[in-house]
Amino acid sequence: MYHLKVLIVDDDPDDSELLSQALIAQGFPSPTVAVGSDVVSAEFSVEAFDLVVTDLQMPGISGFEVALHIAENFPRIPVIGMSGASASELGILKVYGAVSIAEKTADYDAVVEQVLRHAKRIQKTDP
Image (cartoon, rainbow, N blue to C red; front, side, top):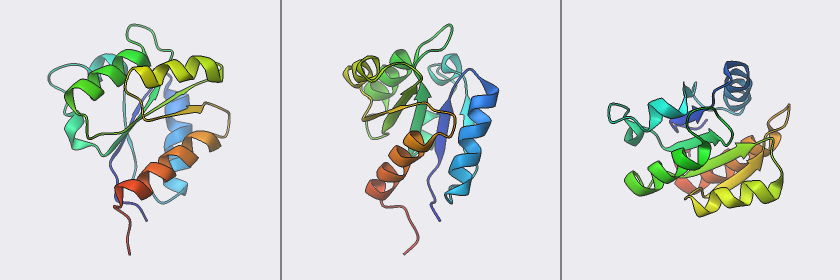
């Protein structure tokens, strides 16, 4: 069981729900879901989270902007970028402060794998 507070940033409620369920199945508490414009607003408490997973391609504000905002304002919080885009496009996200990238697939295996990897690094698991 993991005690991490995960924030999912995605404009698609169906995708957010599928990823939430995949993380819950791995022992995470129910993640919080938000859209990008909410995350960069002054009223949103990003510091309340241990890990952020953001979609790259969203209308209004991109995952690039979300990752950069978090890297500049909350550098202790790892950001995992995800997208259906090619791996080379995802690589650009690291320039914006993301610590990890994963291709968004129907089963979210790659994203969940990255979340698990960082969860172990954060070391907030039960003994």
